[in-house]
Image (tube, rainbow, N blue to C red; front, side, top):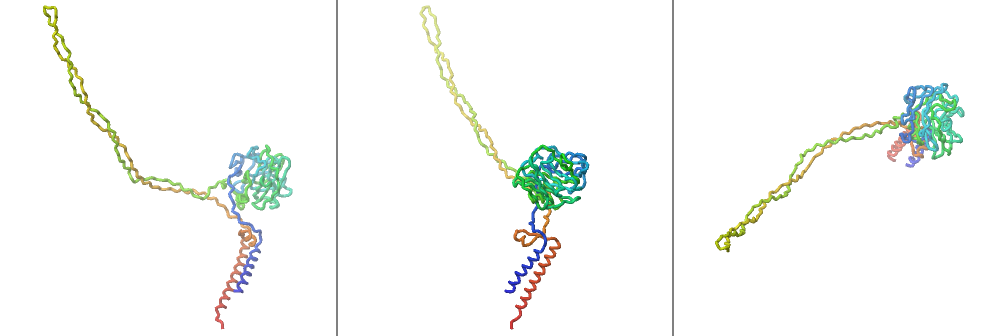
Amino acid sequence: MRTIRIILPILLITLLIGLSAVPGHAAPMLLPTNPGTTNLISWWALNEASGTRNDSHSTNHLTDNNTVTSSAGVQSNAANFVSANSEYLSRADNTALSVGDIGFTFCGWFYLSSKTGNPTAISKGSSEYAIRYATTPDRFQFSIYDGSTSNAVNANALGSPGTSTWYFVCAWHDADNNTINIQVNAGTTNSTAHSTGVADGAAVFTISSLIGTSQYWAGLIDEVAFYKRVLTDDERSWLYNSGAGRTYADLTAATATPTPTNTATFTPSNTPTITLTPSHTPTHTPTITLTPSNTPTDTPTITFTPSNTPTRTATASNTPTHTHTPIFTATFTDTPTSTATATETLTPTATFTPTITYTPTITNTPLPTRTPGNIATAFWDGVITYGDAANVAVTSGVLLVSILGLLAYLATTYLQNRKPRK
């Protein structure tokens, strides 16, 4: 057991040394993030064969100057510019295309046919902001103007760009951290301190021109995006897409989460039973019976009997005159009128038949490019790095030999311990 405790650390150290011999710089595995359309100002796909180039996201459509043609691009077509013909695309100044002291990002694909004359890819006027190739110092460059002085940052991490090659260039102004930055092919970022913002002028916005100069782009430009915010490393990596690029449609692609739509069908099994509970409201209809009561009233009638004697003697003769004063005796007979109040008892049984419609649109996010690195550094950083195919083969061989050696040692030790002692 003592021997095992000695050999195991030796084998582990040997394994680490073998893996650390893999060349390269350790880098974490990043998951690219779709930047979406948050604070997106414009996206120019530049797919049109000629004429106006449309803004896929907004209304900043670009006017064709001196007949810009098209050729195959990173995604579909790209605008093809001939510097000798002073070809460029333009849009008049407006609030959307002006910046000031805010964070903003431009990303696009650029292809140089010639490196002569500081060809400009994107600019606003001759000074507000510009992305171009600068013959001195032979770099892609992002420059800005704050109203009094100019500042620039060069893509030194890339070095000298070649012709007839597509490059994905992102340039941005970080108003929070007071820097201007440039990055090529989602690689290392170059930054320069800048704290005075960017001028907000009335100059025209152009692709393939620096207005007032002869610095026209010579080559192709494709899929240009303009955000009024600083994109993250993961978002720029997503746009680069390992060199395959993206389209505007990729930004707004739906997730692959299906949304069920339930259509409920009610099938009542019980027919409602109506129970009538009458409520009696009696209506009195009186029946009147008249019982007359005769109360005679005597009205005397005087009859005069004349005699020779002028003295007349009246003889009263009573002739009664009857006046009937009826006495009414009312007999009431109730004839009830029934008012029925219906009480309904409903016992429906509902049957739900949901219909689920899945309409997923899946956005394929490619796996990140894995950069070979030092396994010891990776362990300390809490990330895993990978080598290329050849280095993985060498590393696997070292690991296999180490494991086989350990197994052989353990087997030998076991067999020795099995021998009977004399």
